[in-house]
Length: 404
Image 1 (cartoon, rainbow, N blue to C red):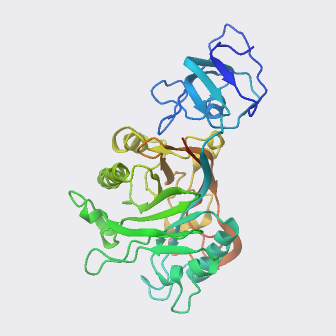
Image 2 (image 1 turned 90 degrees about the horizontal axis):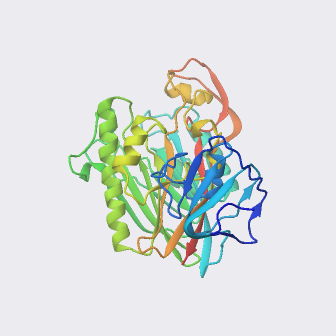
Image 3 (image 1 turned 180 degrees about the horizontal axis):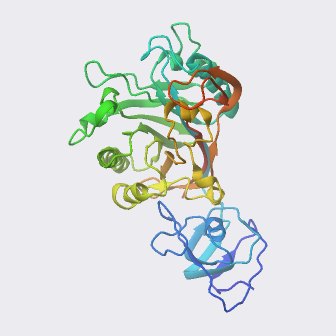
């Protein structure tokens, strides 16, 4: 028997529920159709959007589900109490007038090429080829990159094959414009299996207060925006890279940049009301620490959802670290590297409520392949031999889109 007369389960669910009617204290985890940006076990103000996520967040949980239809296939194999409140909760309702899937990958490549140092460093040419071949094998709908400073490594030219042509993706954009004399470009690049339209590059320097600190001012940071159409859905991809550094000044700059970017996203959503938006990239915000809480509770708009925190698979992934000393390449660029989640996929349903986004999986995805040997200019490993393609690990997310 399932606790709560208002709970209704469809045959799509595969439920193996052992309900324990015990007197000991149980964790109450909350679920709503919309969820929250950063769900927390036991918090009614930071609910989960997936029932399975709420189940796995605690041992022997009591999962309190707000009434509605939940479009997820779930397999509950741990002792759980499910309780609907307000109205019936229909679990496993995948019916919709239209639906599709989208897979996205975001990776900070740290590819200088010959733009900065003149002759290239850290096997950049060879790593770009490896990254292209891994991307070709992934066949994700969207591949977003940061720190491709030499556009030849993306488009091809100057003796380079280029990640875009070598990977075989249909369309791509590199944010190679600059916002000041002597500056380098944004380093941002996005490519897609579908045609990209409506491409734009925008700069943080155009934001109120022109937030920028130190050496990062030499790169034309901001974001690039592209639109793709898949199975009748209009999807916007926003790729960004914010201020680096851990000082309080850098953190303040990042929050200003993210606030400006997400204000732009919200204004865009209000104008294109049937559009789903994904914001991806290297935020340089360390996940699950104080700055992440500031971003989640103060900077992000209410509709923003963290793809990593909203899936059951995220639990137990070593914190979702995308920058870690386990990666020898990371020590080349910063010998003081510590475990941190810096790279994100955020998603927004359509502003008019007609299109919902349901995350299926979000995982840390190492780009690994052929071993490369080079010398480190900074870290404790010199010379370096590693199969890592970047000092960051990628984030790979898979999502379902449903039209009401």
